[in-house]
Length: 119
Image (cartoon, rainbow, N blue to C red; front, side, top):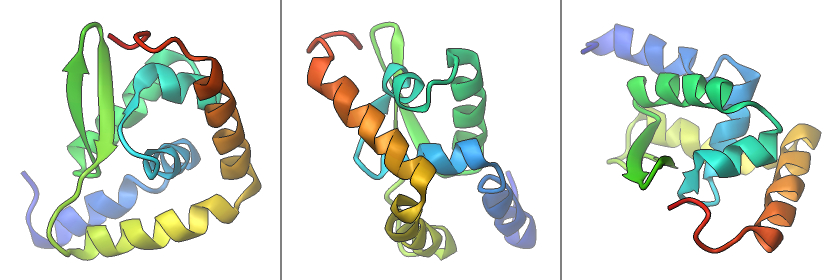
């Protein structure tokens, strides 16, 4: 486990990739299945899973298994630097065209997604 300054650096490093920022933006909607993220980002499962592992290891997300799929959500922890950054990201990422397009694809997908497709 990291301590002090190393933890801050690891927390910030997790946000240094555009795909991870897009994942964080989508997770502001709540818990999502890897299949949901694949559809919204138009990205292969292996790439999504790699980025989610990085986010999980750096303390941004938690994972739960449902059937064959993993579901992820942003960690909701006590007020920390990380939660303050998360609040800023939740309010500013949707202003970016790529995040708005991800949201559009995600909601279009939800409208046609079978109810038990992630089990």
